[in-house]
Image (tube, rainbow, N blue to C red; front, side, top):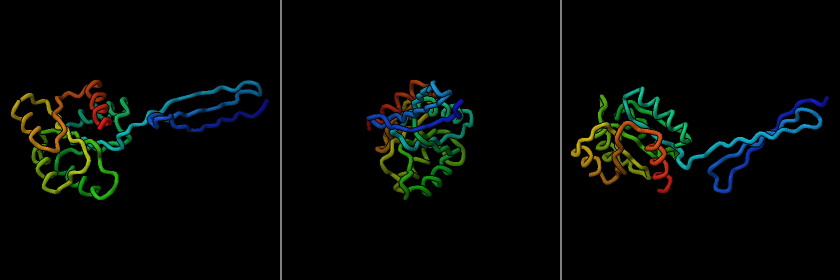
Length: 172
């Protein structure tokens, strides 16, 4: 009997949105089994969630993984942590392309974060969405009054909402 071997090679699809992993396994001298798996790629390199609720963050992380929302994600517990973290990476190329900002957080809430974000001139090509369970029209209008805020999303975020958001962001 011949020795067992396993070979992998990777190939990008034509549109570079999926990475195919082809695995060839020789089980005997006559049988070769081809195992194909697809690893989906996202156009969104880095997403950032700013929310103090650990259960919500866990759920969002799972939704991001399931939908292949982004290649990587950052999570901050409040606006102050987010400002400090984003300032530290603002000069680099790994700045988030999407920010999901909760309104009600301790230390620095979402409104204070948006004000500070604007003051520090962190505005890069980033889509910022205010995410809240509030249906108060004044808060919706206040969020939409910021020229750099792309929209207001009602919690809870569902699989469908995350898929729609991904499509919207990827279209530009």
